[in-house]
Length: 321
Image 1: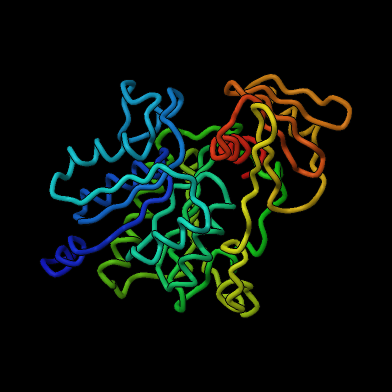
Image 2 (image 1 turned 90 degrees about the horizontal axis):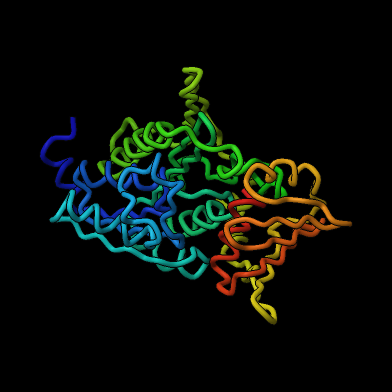
């Protein structure tokens, strides 16, 4: 199907994998086994024991290691000739603008919409194709985005939802085979992008539910008034940092969007994961060794954490999606 020329193109290509969790590790392995010759891995988090049932590359010996580095070591054993570069860092506008223009395709292994809007801005600004993919519970969605040839992420989702509006993977869980299935679809789109296949369909949104066996395809149209690919306003690249270190061992995290949170509903969802209670007009959550005090406007104080990236990781994982 690809032929010698197609394999040559894959070998000369550069892929950027953002996120090295379940979806990212399956995607990275499939990319290298397909013959992609240069892969950069970005992730800010550490391997946890709870990751092991659904990831492709990690073992119990990797618990506590940076995900990007553990994934890179495993991938080097799978594809020794490939150039693999791990980047252990929070994906902020500076890093997105540094890495995205150097790639031929960007792959989605992220766990929150905010980071996806950031990648969408960077890729649209520099004309870099990327593949949006998200998984939750028993289902997932994926769509190739090729700037200038179809819709971008903000054509599909014009604005991010308010914090706490969408269940996180920590709350809803992820069925182990789901990331592997969506990774296969995502990598197929990436191969089509890299080999310039005429069969690539930018804007084709695929929805798979492995538990029910449902598979649906929807054609997403480009929105003429899209603030990103239409009006070329790259708002997420211009956003300042949302974290600030306060006196003591606490970090303040600001919400991306404004609006009142349903603190009682959020407490009920998080109660299965840790201690969560509403006290007066704030929600106090004790989880992963930290205490999050969440205010009705979405602002949170993360106590017991001095690293801003770690604080935002906890916020994204449990408060925002």
